[in-house]
Image (cartoon, rainbow, N blue to C red; front, top):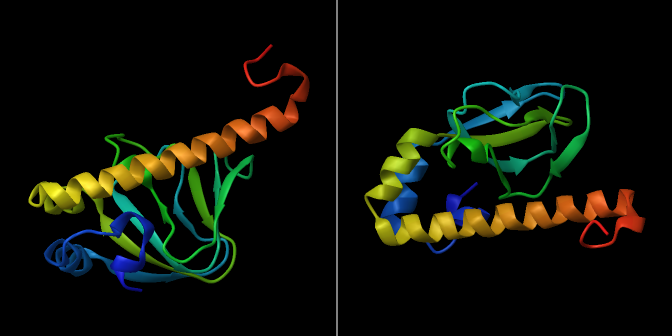
Length: 150
């Protein structure tokens, strides 16, 4: 998969894309494999090539989101300054991802501030969308509360 096709890497400079591609490692995983678990050190950032990954906030527990579209990203904690992952990521079918060391990626983005700004703007947009999705799911479980918790 080309990084330029991934959501968060859109519009980044060619030099930054090439530098990020050099540190990315393609990995293939069988169903049942965890890329990371909640509480693990947040060291890597992932881009889905093919497959499906269940993100959950507790082992075997509530599904927060399913990553299933090529170019989707996960492991944001590693890029947002958190020491540990807040969710677990389990492959639920044969899956191929790009694993990118977060500290190295942040260094690359710091070296190209315009691309770094675009990357983090995309990340903020993506996290905001996931938050709105989460709000919708919460409200659907408690419709009597209304939009403001009534």
